[in-house]
Image (cartoon, rainbow, N blue to C red; front, side):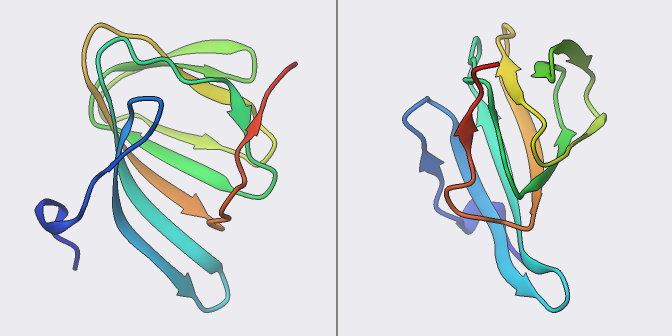
Length: 116
């Protein structure tokens, strides 16, 4: 069990706050990570992709996301699956956005700028 209040939060250079909740090896699956990402109001994320990682986002707040050329308006409670190679990035909204993120397999350094 992980208590979010007891975990050190990471302030990223882009202003996002990440709370790592779990990062472990799972037999037969590889490394699996869960985190809480908190975006401040008007946060915008550079478009990027992952070669190996699949990410699942469970939105705790309404948000806007750019996914493979489409702007998606996401409601609290929506689930979005980002496949490896699929470009994506957060778009600005006027309020804080919290996202529970599941990464499988978790691969350090597997974030690449999208220029397409």
